[in-house]
Image 1 (cartoon, rainbow, N blue to C red):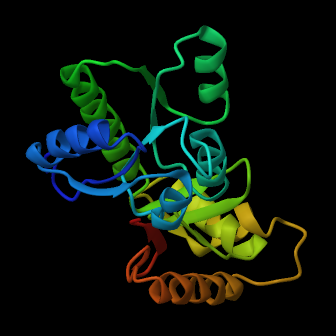
Image 2 (image 1 turned 180 degrees about the vertical axis):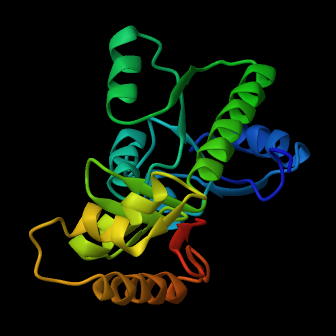
Length: 223
């Protein structure tokens, strides 16, 4: 898939001449562009489905920095700032508030388009890395295609143990020892019950096969 395919860009710029020029260049490159002429309109138009936001700073009603803060409260969508403010403190402020890039006006169209392509490539790689099942050991959370899966501590333990060794066959006894421990009053039958609950939760999210049964042995993680 190329960078252009399915790429949706929000362009927020109050200077009509600049807005129309940038929009034309983006559309010629094959991107879908939604435009807004001020910060309030940009806030109304934004949603996390955008692949990139190209954002002016000095705008009426709501500044680009105010809109940037709102975007960062709800999304990690890449934001490329366009601004006539060229001083280092202004650039630092924009980046510290969550912008991913800062391009000073006047700018060369070729450089703008190169930066757009770079951000879309990074976003594409990031989205690809988030596909499938991810286990975050630090937070004790499991995600499916970036969406959190609500698991109990036991369910997380089973998924974590299996996911640490994809494709490896685990016996019920191995899983029981890793998750329940030696001192538990439970039995290996609990492994089957927990696996069944895990499968049910993933199935509701559209993932039918996360843990495979291995006849005569136990289970295997397939992600």
